[in-house]
Image (cartoon, rainbow, N blue to C red; front, side):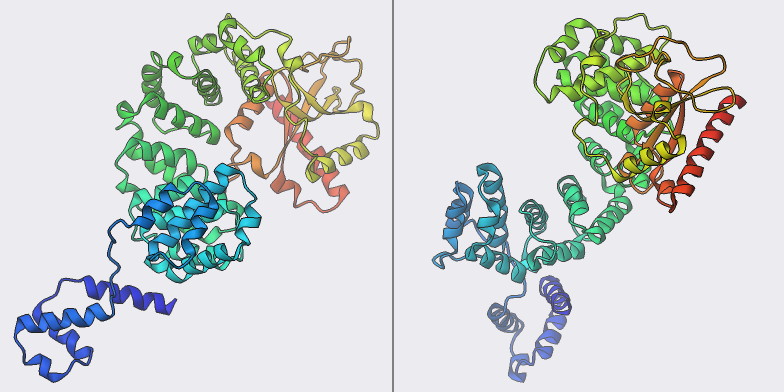
Length: 517
């Protein structure tokens, strides 16, 4: 680290424009013979140039070489590795560009990544990058880090850690667009690779230097890629850009911004004014967006409680939704799930909406949202505690899917004395496959337990993400009393007795709040 600091100081001294007196001072510090000091100004500078030529301290941008074209035209990893045979003159930046190209080729060709990474030539390439990392240009360095992440090197890889450290050194000095590129391409990898220090510093500089933002694309990128990690940045972007530049956003950029807001359940301070501009801008353009993006935008507006009836009608009409319902492709299941949520919004939150609606059979035909997911420890723990507490499985339902597209972790029916009742014969119109024939007894209440684990929350906060906020709203509007079980409270409970008492207490508070309304 000390040697790199010295290299930077030398580079700054070499490139700094100085007076002749300063030049003479440097010559003295360099122990230049006294005879040199008696020469004319021109000869002094000429002699100094000769000294600097012997040991260059500034890395110039080299002219394009033949090897640059060979790297660009390479169509296989082997063509890249052949350039390391010693016949080509490679400067400091070439090794980084070769790693970047290698990662792209491996991604495109679907070759055995692990086998190629173990190749001695690749290891030699990584070693060269490690030695020359301080001389790599800013933009190339950011792309290099992303390429190393995609190559899935081990966390203790010397090359990876060296590049990460170099990026941390430069975060203060690089252009803001380099920070945005790094955030756009590498944040998911940083979270997976346990690069928390780099991620923390990147967020810090994005927040501090936000005044350098000068285009709409950067605003949208930061809101979609970084917004869930930095509430201060979201607030600053709102203050400076959202209303001032709303007319400059393209329909696609505006759509991406709405999707980002919905994911975080972010509501601007000037919400009414902002969404007035949004509807004005999107109204003539919404139908021109791709069908999938149309569904995403309307679903996001449902999350934010800003959807209009005309927008609901546009995606719920048969001519539009049949292209998804008639398709057998698996990727359309997520879109169909969102259509069910939009349909639920129209039913539960827009009493004046008169249709159209989705076919009644659609929620029944969709697979449960968590069909292929493994049961989490918290989920299993919750079920075991409730079974032991109730003493009978006919008094509780687990994992049922509602006609509104949301899954219930557990469901109970309580009588007027707040005692659980057997549920089998009671009508359950809210389920995707309604059961039972008997109505609920007078004064009975239906409770839904919802388990909220870490991924359900906005990063670094206890605020639920937008889709889960909408789930709570829909279930409450359908007449269920929602009992929230967040992970940060559940993890503090050590014994089964504590967990059982906790669930009873949460249930009692929910019932009391309902009676107090």
